Length: 111
Image 1: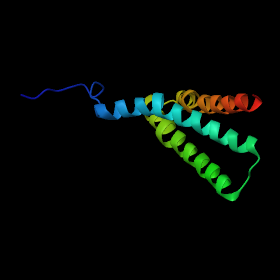
Image 2 (image 1 turned 90 degrees about the vertical axis):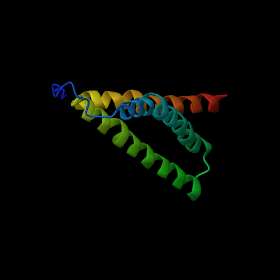
Image 3 (image 1 turned 120 degrees about the vertical axis):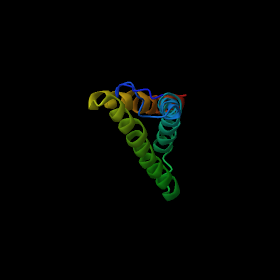
């Protein structure tokens, strides 16, 4: 017996891909960006600009850019086919948590 499904009803991605992308977007990426914003602001506020610390912040920044582009922006572009929605996904999953991490560090620095 052969079932013929409408091509639009077929899922092109396995179920675990969907769970992985949602977990990455809603849990892992915001946690990484909050902690990274905190660490980067700590580096800037501390004033200890040594080469090892500078290189760590540089590598961290490149890693975050790759994470935001490859796993959030591209994945959302494929799913929604709209660059505006993909940018909003990056904004809410990456940029806002990063800014919150920076603000948390600046708030602690004022204490």
